[in-house]
Image 1 (cartoon, rainbow, N blue to C red):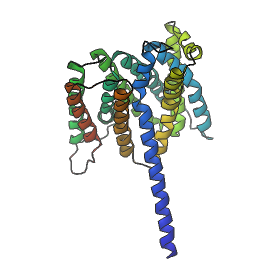
Image 2 (image 1 turned 90 degrees about the vertical axis):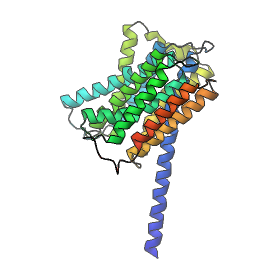
Image 3 (image 1 turned 60 degrees about the horizontal axis):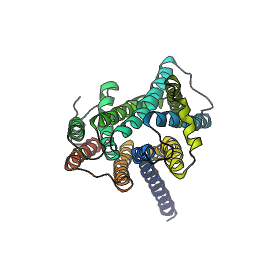
Image 4 (image 1 turned 45 degrees about the vertical axis):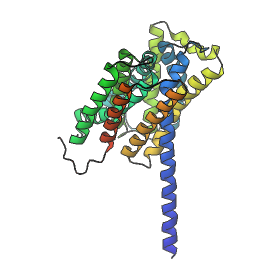
Length: 323
């Protein structure tokens, strides 16, 4: 009787942890999904700050830098493993992939295309990550995931190459696709570094490197004064979309919530919750907040992309592996 009560308490505690982990993944999905919408609001002609793509990623990088430095300092292990040349190169690689690779490309892409297209293209992340892991990390790529990559490419091509309404453009869609590719490449480096260092410490270090690289870009092209835009325009819209969403919630809180979810849930479940959640919340925000509308071609492409996402996350039991 006593053992049954203890087991029941343990089961209840496990369910509570899983519920908290699922909630963390879904909340982080809100931040990731609303990224393009926040950028669009800051680019709007009526916005007080009047950001453009370059000023946005330079300002975001410099303002996010203290947060990543604090995260790295707070999670630094007491016994820090030796920094080998390989790991130093990986940290630099991840920093470049995060800063110029994801932050800059996402800002440039959102400036040149619609938020709904940017959100739908997030579906490419899981199949791309699986394909790159098979190519560079020699992870097995099943026939199902290979098919998912093909379907994802068809969906992305349909979305990008057909005529679409609104502010979507081919070059903007290609920049968002490049951002997704950089994000997938970033995961490869993170996987390698997580074998040696604590996960949050890795995030803090490569995040700081990425932010510094964005500041260097701003200095090199004479746009470092962009850092002062949030100081000069302390209005509700700038505080809400730049300070809160892009700097605090997307850059830092999203990473922390993802780590919390990964401690309890399988990677596949976290990826599924984050990917589908990002698409749902991002599309809802683009339709409600920005008033964007999807064309028939957009809906057809979305069907391909969501199918590719689902296939890439489907359990592989019952399917033979391609290699």
